[in-house]
Length: 225
Image 1 (cartoon, helix red, strand yellow):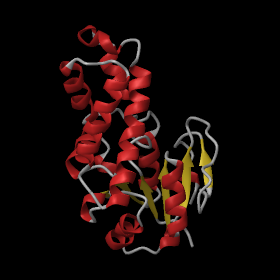
Image 2: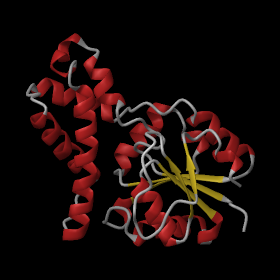
Image 3: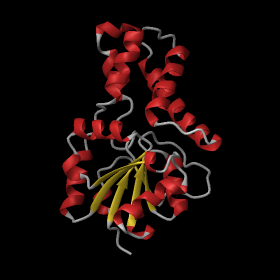
Image 4: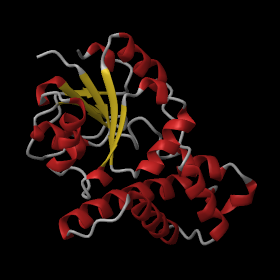
């Protein structure tokens, strides 16, 4: 079955989650980040994800903005960053994360092929709309789907169900793309074709399914039709 619908995770896949800490660290007003921003960015992302999994398992859902703040607070404390002004600035920047350089051209190429395109993310609708607007890619996306519609985080099947419910497509018509190995595995186990964008060159996760494609970036996504 040809791929008709290309669905992308947002954070770390289309949008660079390290961009907020990197940008804030360049500002002399946030000199406390200068030496530790890579560790802050890494720990922030790790805790953000861990908190989604733990909340899903425990049945204690909250929106992604809450786990984003909680993850940042942990990361700042772990790395000795205490300035509240720095916290405020990092959170502001998270609403306008930079898209990876290849994203606009890649999405434009998919639309030129007549493909449907969407985001499927843990992010709350407001956060996602802010990032999409900031990156100026709304005109090459057909939908922005959020886990808030089902009240549980990925990789629960109810999240992946949102794609078929919105587009009326079958699972084998979907290519799901994520920079998170666990998310690509979850989507593959669900029945989607999947591509893992392995920018860091990590090993494949030992889970119940594996991605069908492993890529270094998003450039060649339009070739996977």
